[in-house]
Amino acid sequence: MAATTSTASSNILTTKKNLSSLSLTSTNKLPTFSSLYSSSRRQRFIVLSASLNSKPTVLVAEKLGEAGINLLKDFANVDCSYNLSPDELCTKISLCDALIVRSGTKVSREVFESSGGRLKVVGRAGVGIDNVDLAAATEHGCLVVNAPTANTIAAAEHGIALLAAMARNVAQADASLKAGKWQRNKYVGVSLVGKTLAVMGFGKVGSEVARRAKGLGMHVIAHDPYAPADRARAVGVELVSFDEAIATADFISLHMPLTPATAKILNDETFAKMKKGVRIVNVARGGVIDEDALVRALDAGIVAQAALDVFTVEPPPQDSKLVQHERVTVTPHLGASTIEAQEGVAIEIAEAVVGALKGELASTAVNAPMVPAEVLTELKPYVVLAEKLGRLAVQLVSGGSGVKDVKVTYASSRAPDDLDTRVLRAMITKGLIEPISSVFVNLVNADFSAKQRGLRLSEERIHLDGSPESPLDSIQVQIANVESKFASAISETGEIKVEGRVKDGIPHLTKGRKRIRRAECQCQLHECRKDRST
Ligand SMILES: NC(=O)C1=CN([C@@H]2O[C@H](COP(=O)(O)OP(=O)(O)OC[C@H]3O[C@@H](n4cnc5c(N)ncnc54)[C@H](O)[C@@H]3O)[C@@H](O)[C@H]2O)C=CC1
Ligand SMILES: O=C(O)C(=O)COP(=O)(O)O
Image 1 (cartoon, rainbow, N blue to C red):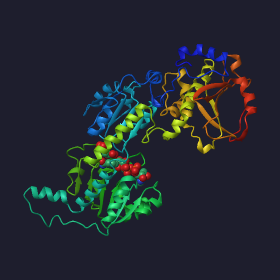
Image 2: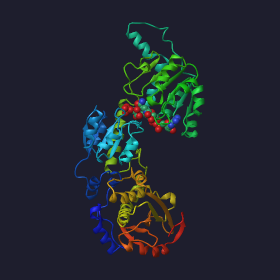
Image 3: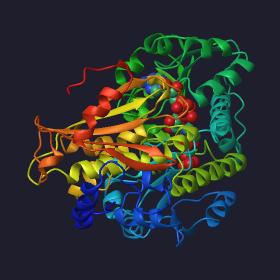
């Protein structure tokens, strides 16, 4: 089967000779799942034709634990270049297959544009992915993975450290004593026991903070619009509304991600609703607080103290009123910085990046559908079939007649819930788009690419009687309202239909237009979820 448009026509002729039994594989080898992520046609065929001959290159742009670097080196050439300027990063990136960053590197749209399609995966060695332009990554078909679990405890412990240090003026008293003073009366603190702590964002870090705060005898409430109440109840925490949380808390600890919805969620208006003398801890992201408003709230006595690990701009300006404020305790984004967490994060991200480069589906993918590995293994030959059917169908369309409406029909004995078609849909989209454009489509950007081209892809499932052992009996791709260069390839109603199935692990084209109707009659149609138009 043709790999590119230039060789497509000869393959179409071959196909027409024997539509019913043509094997759709051009080699005996099935591709690895690397093709799911590959964002360049050239790389894809390196992967498809054989195993990778040359090692991929991974750029590590911020300090990463040794164990992670060693894992990467087993598989790739590793370039550790720290403190690159944005321009230097853009220059280097065109030579890299993967990039690993922490929170200090902005992975902007320019980075993806400069990669020339080579960058396949960005690994964020930590949780927050607000420094990665996810939309640009998706548009460029670049997978983004993070390391969401290894620094949870470190961040929670740092939150508790800041909470206690703030309440007892540890940093201020330390500076005072080192300056030769002995100010016991000035640094009288407040107790934590019996006080109400509002945990804002009851995810991994927030719930660990809550657990620890309860151990300190605090009354803990939480606000999180997405957290299940039973998870909070299990920790002995009541979920409350945003307004109730901020109005009743003596201490507020922030643990939500920075998103458009959470940006500056603490502002003049919300500070005004807080209890006078409230104390605030932030180990989430600086941007969730309007920092100027916090200075105003501190000066007005609404906020008694704040302890901040994160800032809107990092590092913050030296003359930042907030950082210099006497009642503010600061640390330079140290939440994840324990030996243990950095070791764990390095391993977690190295494994995710290597896995993604090998084409395995990463369980920590941020911008791709999460399809379990066992589902992928099972669907592997159908992935090949799906792409090839898309390629064949689109090559039968005559130039100029735009492909807009595509219907995909999956015939399967499996219950609809047992058949995950997201990967297949992505690969059909890849097959449909790549031969007629310069866009490289993969699992990450398939839906985006289809939408951008005005391609409407609808899916239908036909339930067949029989054993649900194999996930699929056949896949049919049908393009409506088009013309074809081949009279026999198009139906009276102007549709191109191709259908294939997998036999002995090899994808086969089983039906062209003429055979499809007969085959449809033979099908034991049990359930048809949508109305079939033919
Ligand atoms: N200072 C540091 O070094 C570190 C900072 N972090 C930050 O902490 C954040 C939380 O990390 P995890 O707990 O691991 O993430 P997570 O994803 O497990 O938890 C985030 C929680 O915030 C909730 N949330 C989302 N929108 C919200 C809203 N509008 N109001 C209240 N809750 C909302 C989510 O439902 C989720 O439960 C990260 O996004 C990261 O920015 C994480 C690790 C280290
Ligand atoms: O994991 C996170 O979200 C963090 O903020 C940790 O950031 P870092 O990797 O230490 O720059």
